Image 1: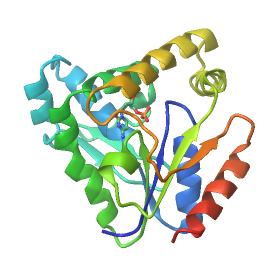
Image 2 (image 1 turned 90 degrees about the horizontal axis):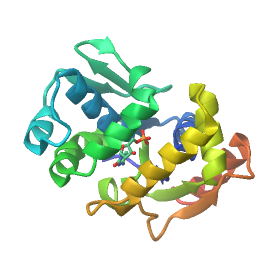
Image 3 (image 1 turned 45 degrees about the vertical axis):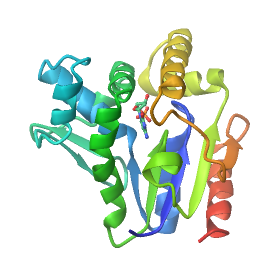
Length: 217
Ligand code: DC
């Protein structure tokens, strides 16, 4: 396994943008592990699989009908050979993803595929909720990114063209689900750099993360 940096944090804390920029600066690959849960949830809905049917969901994790492809600009998801990366970005898919991510069987079944992302010739920046705690506990450097809920909701609402108050509610519900689930809840790794991005712009966040990572690798 190559070198790994993990960036975890709540919905819309800027993890994806920061990890993409960081990976570009380091010349490494990056993966959004949320894409695995989003892709699985999307495939389940398309195939009319009940989101409570744990057995069917666990089987679906290995079904080649949906696939993940790493890319410098986005972690892409394909369903039946169609690029559905834009479709899985919707907040309702995020919510379904959060639901399927509750099941230990599902999390376990996706773990190898997530870890395999670090097997390439370059290092890997991995972002999600449990990257530093469960997926890559031995990562060289770990970061936990936060921002105020209003700030996060405003950011995502602007991205998706949605109402900010609705977004605050939707994100609160998703963060609650993600941080209170029994298995691999969203959590800050003990040895992580804790960074609140509310008052910082993207470059400032990336600079701080980059300096921290450079001191570790
Ligand atoms: O980061 P995201 O919004 O794309 O993640 C979508 C959902 O997937 C998130 O609400 C919870 C789940 N998830 C997870 O349980 N563990 C991860 N490492 C990443 C995402």
